[in-house]
Amino acid sequence: MIISFGWTAQYLPPDGPKDTTRRIWKDRTLKSWQKAWDEGRLTHDAVDKCLAYGGRKIGKITLLERPFLEPLWLMKPEELNREGGMCNSVREFCDLYFGGDGGQAVAVVRFHFEPHGMMTCVENTKDK
Image (cartoon, rainbow, N blue to C red; front, side, top):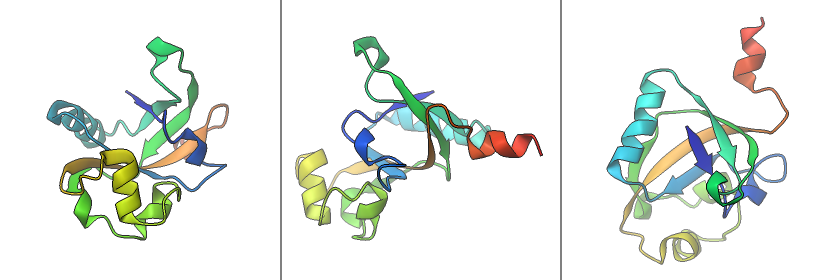
């Protein structure tokens, strides 16, 4: 599977702390990511925007936990850094990415990012 970081790629390591993303996904998309976790398919391609529109592969993500649905109003201020640190408050984050609607439930995906050209931790441990 592929995940796009079109709006937030600049906050991914090594340039930023981003290891979590919140998404408005259709139920079937969330279920596909949950199924990938359940089946042990943890590593996925990361792109800077949709490949059909000129995007390019920027690295890989490895899921750290099963993706889940959570209302935005439950987001804690300490999560802002995990999202990349681009906002100073949860309200600002909701305004910037979710039209100010803190009541909607969004998919939460926690991951480890490896930039393109580097081996992932999963790949490193397979050789040992």
